[in-house]
Image (cartoon, rainbow, N blue to C red):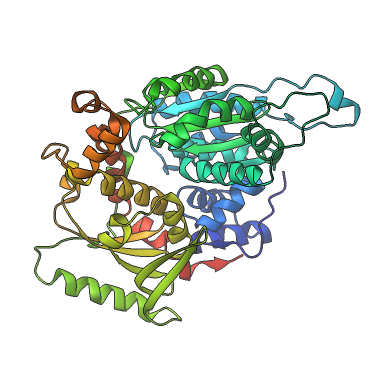
Length: 475
């Protein structure tokens, strides 16, 4: 299969050399393999990764994801992990099964025939940093179709809600004469007429997690429509039966679990090793404590040094997100200098953080306090923010009151006026509410393990160099 890379794609220097050598035929096979290994293994920018995913580019000489994995083991890029291998064996088989699969009619007459039954997808779960996203991305790069997508679950649900809103604004379809009016469901046309037309493989739902009641209530209906032709592969830290655990009105969510298990086989990838925390060269000191001498001065100097390379002035920036204005008090080019209060004390969400990740390659986060149970909402926002920054390879510099491992404290004072007001609004007694994740903080405690793991990797030299969008060369 031919490899087509847009001229506008920005890659890291190592990746650029590899592809230039490949295109000009001036590189021996071992060197080419090493360059492409670097391109795949976190050695390429977000834009290049999108080109790989959208164009279906895969390293030459490999027949599929398992063969590619074996090559990376031989090359020393990866170490052998039997848990990863077992999952890749299943994904490799799905890769072969998907060859030639399509959810669109191939001719006029095929519209009237029974559609082929789509193969089962996979739901891959396990602890943080075990390689779930890596094996899924490896599989995705070998799926031989242009009709595929890879999205973070937050981004997917935001897109779904926007589509539903757009369909609702078009108004209800006209009732036919003699027919009784039925309640109008905007989810079905949204899924079947739009999403299913765009992708016969929607991969991946990275970090499949359900914490929002608005998402929880529509997932069953959404995926029942989506699974009519769409193959799903997802990663998560939770097994299916633990999704939306102790969530509000979870009884209405539980039927979705059966739907998910019907269309996706569950695979566990849990080697007990967090590869993000393995010793890697550090990018230098990027995590500072407030009580360290001259910590603020050091961050100011770091910002000035990075801002000096920007073709811009240091100034406030106003972002427009869904017709809302989000003001950041200090930014310069692709560098944003923010406080925790700016990013997590305000009512911001995934859409705001995704826009920040799109515009900036480096974000300073100052004055992160101790996150107690009384700051569950802020902790939840920080988790969402780090997910968005990590997924877009945005670099971070942090000033916090406590070490990374100790930022979130699950015990402590639970008395909070907002929680009490919400309990009253829902008609819940404190005894009833104590087991719900929205009040208990269990979801934040669980998800924060992922945040700590990701922030650890974000301090490595490899991550820092990869995230510098200003130095990416063009192919």
